[in-house]
Image 1 (spheres, rainbow, N blue to C red):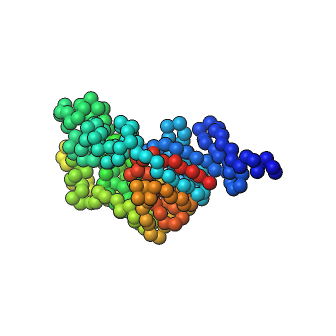
Image 2 (tube, rainbow, N blue to C red):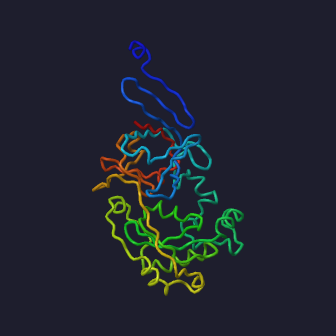
Image 3 (tube, rainbow, N blue to C red):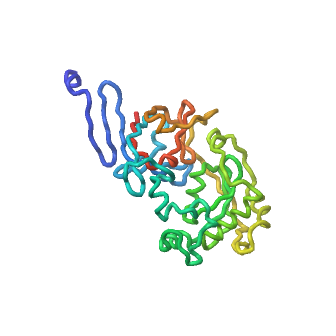
Length: 292
């Protein structure tokens, strides 16, 4: 075994994966790149993918393995510069300038493209706002109302960690969806308790009954778009063990972390020591990820 005494490490690349062998320990994989929202694929359970510039990882395949996360720098998802991330993966300058971070993103009732009125970039706003949108009920920690583009169903529900969801109305633009959500928020919540969602301290609800009960509160402009005959969708997440309590990993305070991955729910990693890591809220963070 003199060969191993001389060459203790070997690195190589095969397809999209970076591999390293430490001959004194075990084989491991390493990835490096800027964090973005995990891509998902419906299934039983849901499949999760981390997508980097030249690599991708099916996260389900590393459940039960040790993940080491190292924060290297910031990389704004718009300009690419190493500037502190302000919100939604963007630096402060980009957040206040680019059309994809306008106020109507978080508050769809502020949408104005249907009036041919520009916020930051009318062409972009027409492309996003003037397409079918869904107002829905989702149960992740409790029942909540939400809005998303039709093309984002069921992705939006998965990202929120909802184990069941149902569509209420399908409208032709974001504005109508927004005013419907505002009206329904007077009678049902619009927030998720992420701690409750991650500990799986949730109860099943009859979403068809809730949908029918809320129908009377839909604004007149959206009443014609009410969906009266659909059923709820149920979602299964890849979790080996739910934590009893959760502690959130903050990469700016803890730039290096290692733990055993026990589950994925919403956009969260769940680790054996009850640490949870929200990939979505850390978009724009450039990291290295080692799996062993």
